[in-house]
Length: 396
Image: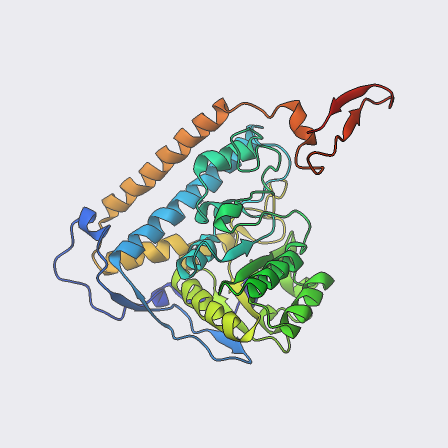
């Protein structure tokens, strides 16, 4: 199986080893939520580099950050599980690609950057949108095609968008977001605003020709572009080793530096993204390969078990799950009890259920919305009926 080829798999005993000793007396739960006392930990695995230095494995965090990571990832996980149920109930139609298992990439990246930095991704975009500051109500409204959605119900699962927080989608064409991301990086360099763009794509898109064309021009012009390959090891149902002669995607840039990162370790992702941002602002593009894993199939039509075994999936859940890693760290530093974390998960479930109920109340888009955001306003474009004789509407 493909999983046997993952050099980054590690036994559970090595997961996020704490370097500092836990205090003898446990903090109260409410105090931990606001406690910024430094805690030093070590990433689960070393980074592997291509023509660049490697970041330090030593990462500084705090009880406050640990609790936030747990809460945010638990919310993302619950949101995606709920989306699965809504799809099976036919309240979500069309394409739907779920992110559960990969939450550490979205959370770790956000922890290393600001909302002035840009992110652009493919169609597995729900959690990235939430990480950028989107709301559950916007997520479920969009998934169900309602007016309250982030794209007014017209984009659906693959086309989430939040420009005011630097999130530029959500793209359905495999690999097409990468040149757009490099274009955002060009604008950032032109404006001299000291920000970067993270252009995310999967291992299935890593062989797209446009990716290499965009990377070439980005390197030629030293653009602050960070290409992030979310390598979940299966492009649809095709294992990476069956599709790529060289699945070491962090080396694919040749003349462009790269890092391989344990994408199931939120602190490794945070450290790598911080390193990449500093590098890109000084030296131009860099590639980050996030070694991650999706628990669901590629999309809702894929059971996810015909090209991999259930033992493989459960093995990743047991040894590398990003939420469980944070849970163990919280216990290791005596920050919260098992009951307190379970209460948080119950609270996340309630938030998701409430958002779904509200989203169901949101109306469907007006039919006239079919014509908005298509043509330039103010040109008097006319809409005709099927016989091309009767003018149905004059667009604003």
